[in-house]
Length: 118
Image 1: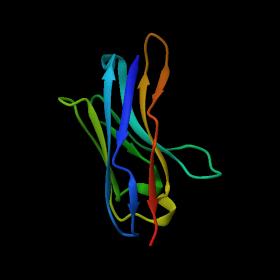
Image 2 (image 1 turned 60 degrees about the horizontal axis):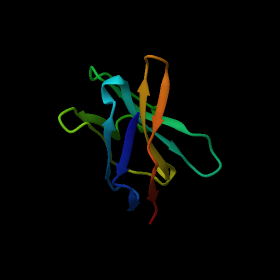
Image 3 (image 1 turned 60 degrees about the vertical axis):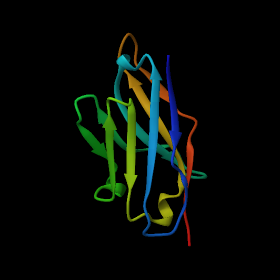
Image 4 (image 1 turned 30 degrees about the vertical axis):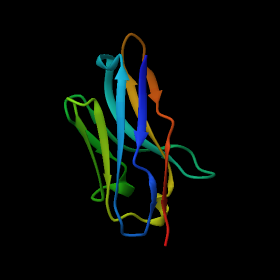
């Protein structure tokens, strides 16, 4: 089992910045990639950014150039630096850990609210 605990959400004005953190514990050696997803009211959960153990990253088009995902393997923590925030970035952000073996499986954190509003 893997436990994921997010922190760092909150209320920020348009154009502002926030940094989300996700601390992983448990059987983390089984995790192939970690990422951030978000879900706005009335919408489906969507991928924001993902990073593999080798450091490869992928971003949603809507956040490219504004968000940066990174990881600190010494702390088993993944970060999402969010700059130039827009009202449309308002959502609950979920940390994800993806396990490939023995069977594919997604681990999820409890979510953290990000609200971008003046």
